[in-house]
Length: 250
Image 1: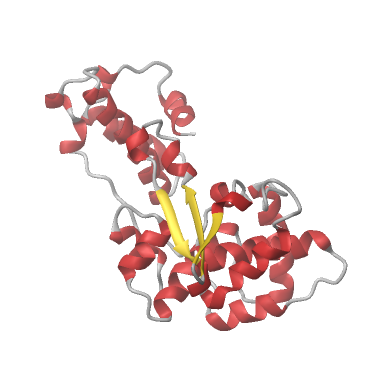
Image 2: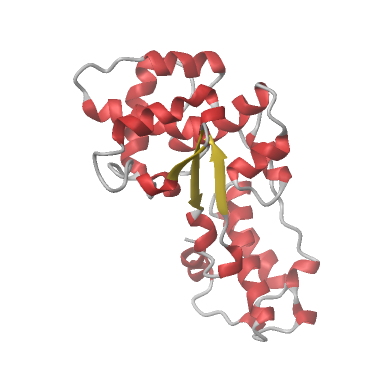
């Protein structure tokens, strides 16, 4: 998406062309197109990643690094999450014979209990679960970390789901573990967000439910129940604790 927007602004671009003037002009273009501050931040963050790689591969001079003078701007957006009471009410919701909404509720709750991104939860199989003594663990490689194509950037996340949210994730795992290879790959992100709107009409939390709300719900509820921020950081797989602080609203 960043590349598409960059091409709309300038059809051809070499690394030598990326200087402070180019960044300022591109920023002005994005704001004129109506993009929000955090969306602009995301695009520039992606560009900075590849500028750093270009310097590493000698495609660009270190002295030409444009982000020394161009600072990225980000604001703390409104991140919805479910409170403990709302989470409890969601657990109790009954959708009768509507198997689609039942499964979406379970997938969403699984993320609420484990903080897993949509891209990761769709890749979960039985092999990602194992037991050591009395503790059931969930372990997986974050897909977001593998997209960078660098072995050193791959990040393993390992969490004791027995000790999180009273082990409720285990109940969902047991329910679906023998149904298919990937336990939760029934829907696309778009489909699941559409069905979450139907769930919200019954939940009445007053919040715009999307799948990512589950990740915020996990972080916030863990901290609410006294889990240290550094532990939550490891569960969510964040590089910086500042990112975890943005996710967790108590």
